[in-house]
Length: 170
Image 1: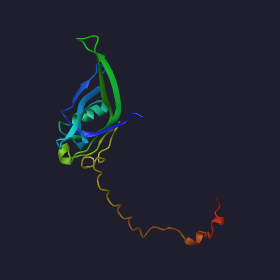
Image 2: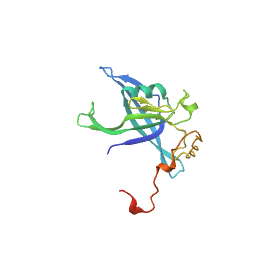
Image 3: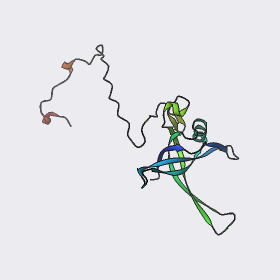
Image 4: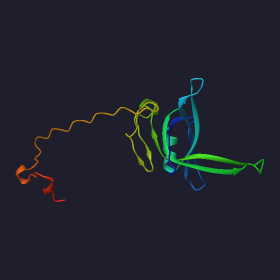
């Protein structure tokens, strides 16, 4: 299975480009902190190249800017190309092809007051959460069920009481 989920900050503003056939694409880099500190007591970061296409590319370029937190989901893609100056040298690339992108910072940080993301053709506003890096957000207690005294549950005489497992029809 090839699935990548990253959460980090954009290192620069994403730039929207179009192919000759009019398909939108957007390249950007996400800085992702490692989960542990180095010998100097500082978190190192990995800089991951990402590419988004079509509506996802338009969504990222419109709503995200340098320094914004972003969560991307996609697949890892490898490629290679020959060096122009040295034909015998092959360069290898690795990018995340982004399928979904979501806001993960605060409302003030996103700048537009909305949280959510672009999920392959459906905007999912309201789906984002503000949470701390690498920490699960606290679970909200379930709200109590509304008291519907006017609801009728039927007459209990309509049901037969089963006293032992031997009487169960299955």
